[in-house]
Length: 604
Image 1: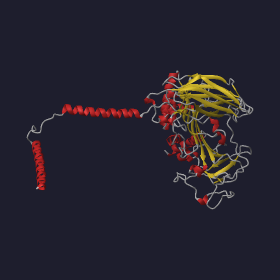
Image 2: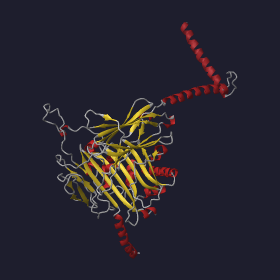
Image 3: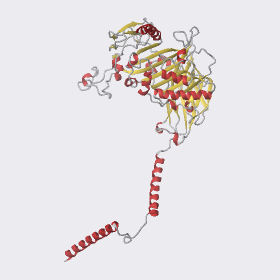
Image 4: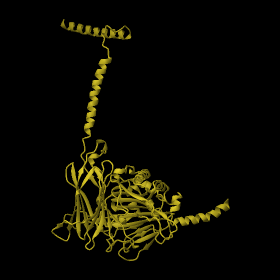
């Protein structure tokens, strides 16, 4: 028996070595202006398509794999997002917006099916499976919240067979609240499950206290021409923007309290400065922080299943200039990038040692990491007043002075929001004209519109728009508000109804990544609240109470008259009741006689 184990041990070690190259994780930290920090967690693993179809899972989570195979899903994209990205302060979005969804939960997938009805049934099965897996309300994605985009999304994976009949379906829940119940299932899909590696830094109290947070799960096939077989890849990412000062607040002090007077930093150059008057001094220095400060814990070594032999296998990277002081413990070894505008440093870690890095407070560096800028600036609001009609206005600006930008504008509206497409207008304003000259030009080159059907499907609108340099376009249209049945109103109907964010996919032939491939860039507007005519739900309550009271009084009186039998006292038969009545009468007579006797004595 011992010899057999010795013979199998090298094979097991060999299999573990081969499998170790199929998992990769990295944490990228980028300091942002005004005391913010962007933390991007990236987890990737590959699985052989043959093992995936045979349900021989190694690093691919079995629970998710079985749900995808049961629904014949070839490619999956799931997003959990809270907060709003501030492009004016934080620059370009991480991952060019490809790992970001609209506020709430957004889901789209490519499903293999023969007909559209069969694809929708499998889509429903997929949504219900993911709802139970991630503790989310994805089971509420029904036909009214499902659309079939035409130009807004394209497959991210590569397929070895063109005979597959793939159907793209998209659904969104803008009112879904993302919380720790969604983060815990996310961590359980990882090989180390938040116990080691960069995933050990993920604490729900810190992640959901961030100014902006996004969790993404992408599953796609990868089939190259030279490879013998295909692979299935799962990528899990978490991006959070942490406020350094707020993250430093201890766990036992959740409510911010005033700073003690001895810790106040006052501007003594002010003429009104005195021992009892303090004007706060502007903090121009970059704030100090460490992993333990912003995440509440140190990093528990490295994940033993991650690939350590790859030249890019550095678990932690920091995007700061080389002249910035960074203190690292004995468990980390620093590797700096080549000098340039995008300087960074990465760290190779010891497997079983806790790791922490500290960035002390120091004057701002003259050279900072390039945060980039967005190719388009967008703003989406509602216009109009009243409970019957309204309007939608989307303002999109191209800040480039040389290149025009073409994009696809994708919008889904609920069925109770009926847009009038004959009122759709696109007005363009040239920023180079100081007087704001506006001209009406045809900037919408293509359009796809699918009207809504009451209680069956929502409105689907896609526009192909081209924006010249230094111009601003305004897309406006009017819509009508429907009146719902009283059973269709949610408990918080007076708050309003959530309208999903619009998706903008930028189409530019000049956008390429480092490998020369076309680069995907996405933007999403903020979600909106639509006020609808809401009845007074207290009236049914009042009617029910009044009706119940009247019915109780009427029924009780009539029933009492019909059932009760009235008899005289002398007609009561002798018995215990008769004796009781006689005793009561006798007592009453004695009391009367005593009262009359006392009155007679007083008269005498």
